[in-house]
Amino acid sequence: MRRTSSETIYDDLKDQIIFLRLKPGEEISQAEISESFDVSRSPVRDALMRLRSEGLVVMRPQRGCWVSKIDLSRVDDECFFRLALEKSVIDRYREYMKSSDITRLEYFIDLQKEAAEAGDTVAFYNADDDMHSIFFEASGLMRIWQLIQRETGNHRRMRILSMGSKDVLDKNIEQHEELVEALRRRDFTLAVTIETEHLSKLKYQTDAIIESHPEYFMNRKADI
Image: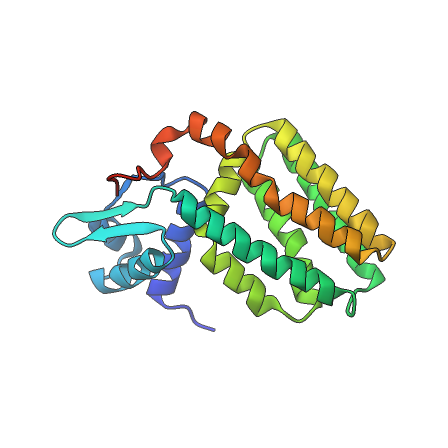
């Protein structure tokens, strides 16, 4: 399917925001984006409006546009949203699981190990997401996975920030291996327990993340 200019710009800007190449609080120039993509301002505005609806940019008439700072209340909401859906999909997954899925899950864990060794946070993050998407794909629920990807931008930025140390990456891998072992034994109750712990651990890392990057977070009294 042919992609529109607005969709291309949206995807490019969203990747830059999620992976912190465009940092929280950084100003976005619509003129520079128009020139970069050789398009009019209209598709740029359309893309930015979509990102605003997802809480990733702030637009102020006559003033400009900025990457939104991370809203911790929104992070909590998005974490709850993803956890609720992923726990449900694992419960459904028991009806669809194939032995070949274990091989695929292990493949993405191997990619995570390679990325951790190389210190490549982006590759690690992508392999992590690819692994989790298998549960949705196998259960015929890829639209739900796409919904999670679209609606959890603040949570995803926090995940990227949390991956700043080898210990965190190693812990992720350890939990993934435990999850795969539970699935191999078809112990779905344990799998849901492991997944809950895995997806909830970010709240225990929040204080350290804020201490390391205080400028990335929304000031409750007044901020963009």
